[in-house]
Amino acid sequence: MMTMRYSVSKACHCYFHHTCANISDNVFGVLHSILPSVNWVCQECIVFTSVTHKSINSEIQKITDAVRKLEEGHTELNQKLMNMSPMSKDPNAGQLTGAAGTTSTGLLPNNSNVSSI
Image (tube, rainbow, N blue to C red; front, side, top):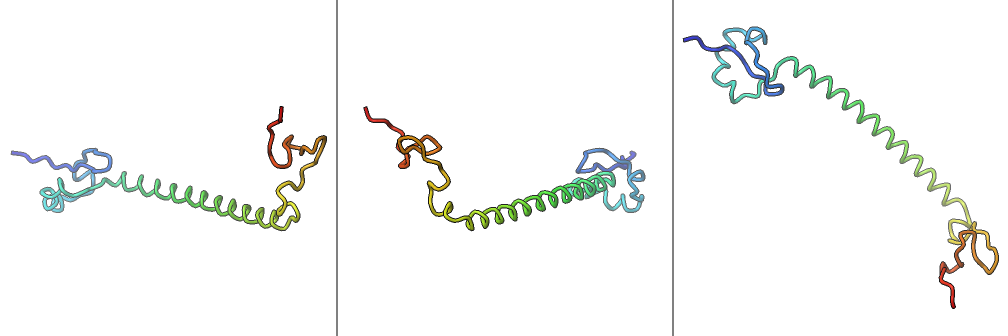
């Protein structure tokens, strides 16, 4: 009776003849009994995973750098806003008043926009 001499990659689920997967007859003889319970992965999947991992890490670094720049810009903007007086202290500052005491937004200064009949 001839025993099949192949391994199944747990990553891609492809079958590999042991010599094609660079597993010697002696090593395969030892590993054959435990291969079903071992998470053996083919070389192609190892390379693919490594390249993908590097690419993902690069993209994460780009996102991290972009977030850092946004945080710095946000902090700078907040500091500029805090240094602008009196607008930072008076909620109605910077609004022009027109007829009947309405502001440039069209609301009465107390934000009541309901007219009395």
